[in-house]
Image (cartoon, rainbow, N blue to C red; front, side, top):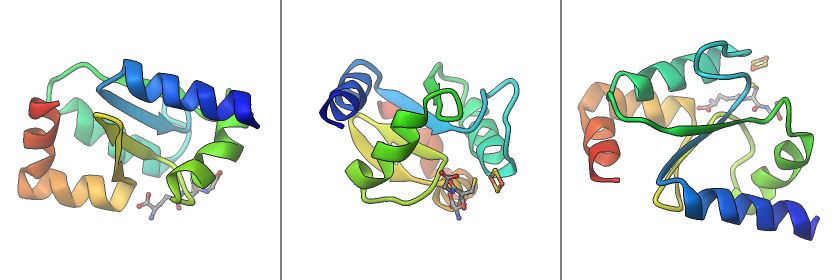
Length: 103
Ligand SMILES: N[C@@H](CCC(=O)N[C@@H](CS)C(=O)NCC(=O)O)C(=O)O
Ligand code: FES
């Protein structure tokens, strides 16, 4: 849907750091979303999130727009950083904190 893609683009424009996830950082609804949001939270900078369980239109459209099939998805400055595996790898290497800090 065009409207949903427009909504996604607007969210990406308005939020330097945004995590599309299942549930919320405080109450994640999946282990992958929990691990990713915890890693991002540990960087100590505020970030936006969208609960895709509450937004089925975004759940359906974002994987096509992003060319990335799963959630969570971390976006920084309008670019997809990756999902849980990538976020955790970057967290371990220290790269995540750098990317978040520079956002
Ligand atoms: N290896 C993936 C794990 C994430 C994953 O497999 N997510 C699945 C299950 S939560 C998913 O989003 N499936 C599509 C959906 O539920 O809409 C990553 O690094 O992010
Ligand atoms: S909701 Fe089952 S693996 Fe994420």
